[in-house]
Image 1: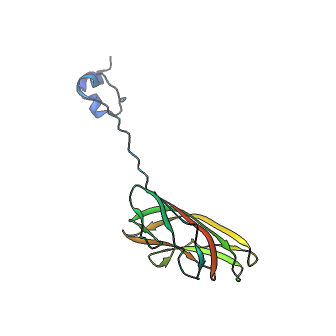
Image 2: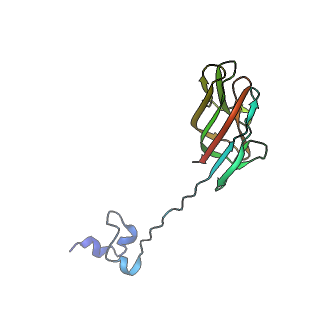
Image 3: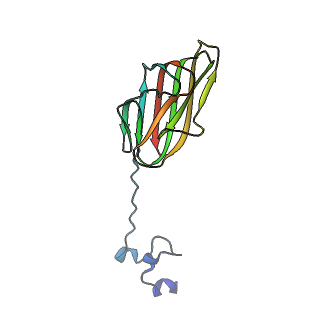
Length: 166
């Protein structure tokens, strides 16, 4: 017999280097496994009637669906975020303007988000789509996120954002 077991009546409470089950577990300890509850916060926004948007103006987005907390619409085409980290997939499609580049970017609290500019260069009048996924950090509650036209005045046909808090 192992003398260490006999001399330590609380072996299951110390549990190291002993296995999780020990002979005294039946009378003095329980091993409860608790599964974590994972909740996801997300938001889906789009606009199928975007129309002509001037350079540096935001593409107005409508709230389609949200789940969890921390993501909402401000009712004026922008997204409101609580402080935290978010994965954002966004895209827009429209007619390539005379500058021959269709381009959008994200703006958080009136500041351009680094690395968020996406562009497609084609012949003016062609139809183009731009899309990207990026991770951003909202520094405080009430942060305003916008999708902004980064090209000359452009006729957009569709814009969409899927955002997930991570």
